Length: 154
Image (cartoon, rainbow, N blue to C red; front, side, top):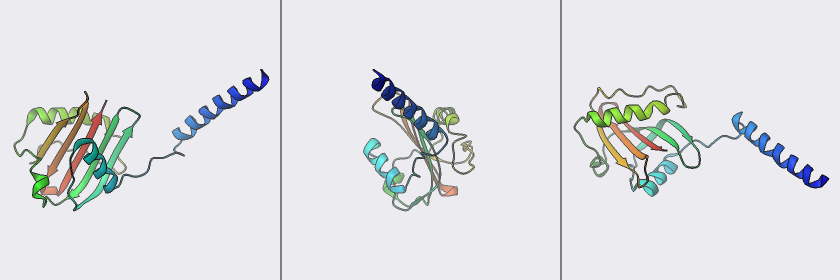
C-alpha cells in the first residue's frame, strides 16, 4: 500500500514538474525550417512552395488538435507554377476573414511584426481543409517580395 502511494505521488510530482518546466521555456520547440514547412504544406495541403524562398519571421502556437502556423517568407515571385495558385483581384470577404483569424497570432512572432492591413496590392489563396475549421491562407505581396503562409486549425 505504501509503495503504491509513493509511486502515485512520484508520478504526480513528475507530471507537475514537466508542466512547470515546459511553461518556463526549458522545453522549446525547434525553429521551423524551409524543409519542415515545405513538407507540412505538401503533406497536409498538397501545396509545393517555390525553391527560391527564405524564412523571414514566424509565429507558431499549437497543441494536439489545434493551433496556428504563420510564416513570412522572402519570395521574388519567379515561380510561375506556384503563382498560378493565387487570385489577383482584391476580395473583401477574404480580407475580413484573414484579418479576424490573425487576431490569434499578433503576440507570438519571433521578431516584431505587424499583420498587413491588405490595403496594398496582393495576390491571395484561401483553402479550407478536409476537416471543419482548418484553413490555409497564402498572400503574396509582389512589391515587398513577401509571401505569407498562415495555417489555422481549431
